[in-house]
Image (cartoon, rainbow, N blue to C red; front, side, top):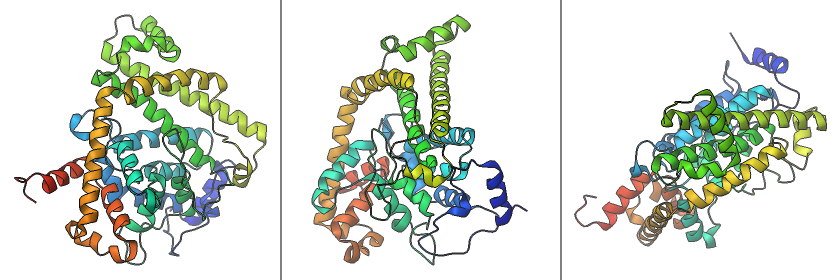
Length: 384
């Protein structure tokens, strides 16, 4: 049987010296006996998968609101794609795949319904009460809001996974500042891998969803060197390929090319810096997991294209603006009349105060639950 002693030997043998080993964890907030044949990070991963917050990701928006169609990515499908990409990168770099997977599966647990428009709405409404940051909310979910165990609140995850949630960063993710996690230190390589895997996943699946929705025309993508190069390569190999299959093949090739570049450049950085331990990673003042300069230059116009043609498309802006109105009106009703909150939420008001309890409740909603609540509260013929 693979017990804790053998797990340690297995990691010592297979993982790189700069990987985060489970034996070196800073532990959990609440002490508990560890599982006999799962590493601490495997246990964290399993707790995340079985949480209510993880299940709710199925009906939380990525770009397109849930009722726009069943095809489009949700927070759950996005999270699974991030996990798959991150595991591939971590394995190639001999990092701790279990830790990487746990961070990837938890990185969006604090997201609101209706994507980033929901977060913007809650941040504005909570401005005088500490604001809203989905990384910080994710930590609040796993530390406090999940109620599954008799001996402690939350999921009682390891320090390293909790750090990965708090310090997650990308163009859409701002690391949360909290005293427990020093911001003079860089996060683990495993966290850095998840950050970039997140970007790779949403860039490419947003392209896919944008084309499928008709908001992006494939003909417009020819102006992007990265897309055009791969398109021409595929047309040479498959002259009469079906357009839908061609799209999927280009998207897969885009992901593969970026992942390959990232692994190659990161290996170069690791050797150049002569990293000997996980602590060496934390001391270095820049991100070590990175693309080459050439790939960064190729990605830049692609990301600008998505911002202009998809995220700022008038139909997406309409969805976003409408979603903000839903959030704002729900928030005001609950704050004005907190007796309309479920009993379990009302019980937390004496400790957490009304504004934060309402914020937690709305942040935990799925898109369709928020829409259903809106109808119950504002439509006179809807049963409550």
